[in-house]
Structure formats: structure tokens, C-alpha cells
Image (tube, rainbow, N blue to C red; front, side):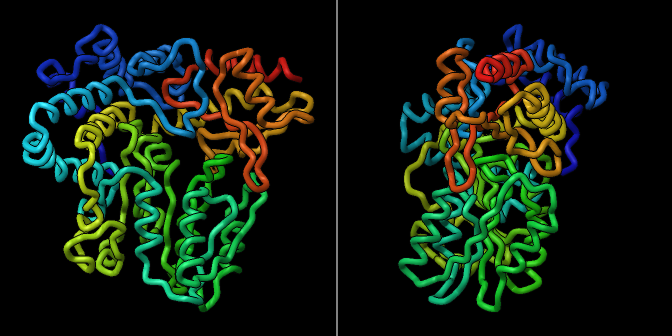
Length: 427
């Protein structure tokens, strides 16, 4: 995506006073806009480590001052402008629901689709707006035309909702699930690609790729796997719940036929918002999850027949996209990677501490997992919260056991110093 952030900021600053965006009319909001304009003249390396700049980003959120939230891997908070937009659209809807929802706000879906497509680097006619990754991916899983004996390749480290959806197709339709099981971290793309390729046979119809493993933060070489699959006529489904608006890429870069993500994760959009991408030529033959007037239409909108939904949540996605652009995809990714390495560097050599996530940007970004010898993940997570009010999550899934730490753009190094202190107190 070719995005001119300087031009965007100049236009936004000029318009913000006339828009119903209360935060940007506060002293903190005006200061943030000024800092963002000044940041255009600074190098990425300098800005990533400027705590004053990121402290101002933090002021754009309403995160608790008494809890250090390092579980953004679950769901991310919304900046104030997004919260304000949800409240504004919700109040408008309640003035006359059937009028304002269906005749006014519903008209904003196409501009929003175009805005998301610009961010995603694809055609608007390939994006459907829905409620989360599970809904998007299950649309593909249950909509693909598979029959008994068709094989699907996936991993034990995929997300439970997706695993259960595939198991339902196995139970209901007789498809065959072929499981891979990885010992992460792995810093060898070819090793991962080869394991997938070895599982492919003449009966393989679909490969399910989790781009960024939510449990541990491992980044898979999605494009290389997809290229091998498509050589063999295998369709590619990509779970990007944790990589969209976290890593700097365009959806088509990954080479998938179907792709789902949650916008309430790293885009920091309203809770219960997501999107489905379907490659244009694949739309016609994919059945919608919810009944549509023409199930074999090649219009992406056939996947949006959800019935009544929250138009406030949907329309406020636009403010989240604007806020993301203000920070910038490259800056955001660099800052998140910097924060991950900041805390790991201070604890990785402590006795009994093990890091289970790569520090290399090619294989990870914000999400990382650590463990302490002779301590369960639950014991460590409970100690951190009980004694330091650091909110993390203990992970026990297949062969992954540890505590997941996930900072966000509002996280400061001072916040991470509290985490480091808590870890040191246990060893």
C-alpha cells in the first residue's frame, strides 16, 4: 500500500476541529497530532526508542493505570477516538433504529470496505466485513466444496475454534485431517515448508495456515507454503487473526485464497469486528455461512447476510483505520518488536528462565512466551498479577507451556520494567 502519512496528518489535523472527535480537541489529542507531524522528520530507529513519543500514544487510550496489561494477544483495547465513535453511532441508532441503522449507517459500508481494502492492499470486491476471525474462517471452512476422502493439512498449534470447525467437517462429511506438530521456536523457513509439503498428497484439497501462532508468537512462512500448495492445485486458507495490522504487509502478499482476521485485535477496532478476504475467482464456488439470496453469486457481499448487527461497531472501524495510519504500519511493527526484545533481553539469561519465542523479526513480533523451571504457567501468571498487577496469561496447549507476554503500542518500557522485576523476584 502506498500511503502518504504526512498528507493524511495535515488533512486530518485541519479537519479534526470540525469533526465529532472529542479526543483530538483536548490538550493531549492536539499534542499527539503535533508529535505525529514532527515524527515525519525522524528516523525509524530513533522514534521506536523515544518513550516520550509512545507515552503520548498511550494518552490516546483509556487503559487502566493500576494494571499493566500484557495480554493484548487476547483482545486489544480501542483508542479513545474509536470508543467515542461507537458511542456516537450507537446514540444515533437509538434515535430511530430502523431509519438510522438501515437507511443512514448502512450506507457507510461501501466507503468502509474501500478503506479496509486500501489498508489491506486488495480489491474492495474481495473483502467482506463480519464480526471476528472465527466467523470469517468458518465461512471458508464450512463453505468449501469438500467430499469424503478429501484431505486437509493443518497443525496442532492452530487456534481451537478452527480445529473444531475442521473436526466437525471430518465428522459430518468424512474429510481427512492430516496433522503437523511443530516444536517452536523454529528459525528455519525451509524446514517448516518441507513439513507441509511432505504432508501433501494427490488427495490434499486444502492447507490451513496460521500466519502468526497465537500461543507462542511464531511467524510461519505463509507465502512459501502457499506457493507450494498452489503448484499442486491445493486451496490455501490463512488464519491471520494476529498478523493483520500487527505486521506490515498486504493480504495478497501471503498468496492465500481465503483469509480471515479479527479487527478488534491489532487494528484496535471495536470488539466484535472482523473481515473475510476471498480471492475474486474463488467467491462464486464458496458457499456463505449464512443464507444468501444467490449462494453462487460472485459478489463478496453474499457473505454479509448476518441479519441485524451493531452498525455502531461496524462504522467505528473507520476511526480505527485512521488511528492505525496515524502511527504507521512500519513504525507499529518496529515498536512492537522492540518492546518484545526489551523485556526478553533482561530476563533470558536468568537461571531457570527459558524463552520459547524467537527474537528475530523474521520469525516473531510482539507475542512471546517464557517459562520458569519448576513453576507452572499458572503459578507464574498468578504471581505476576497478585504481586505486581501485571496481566499476562498462562499457556498450556499441546506442546506449548509458558506465560504469554503481549505488549501493544500504548505499552511503555516502564511498564515492561515492572514485568522484569516480577520475573526476577521468582528466580
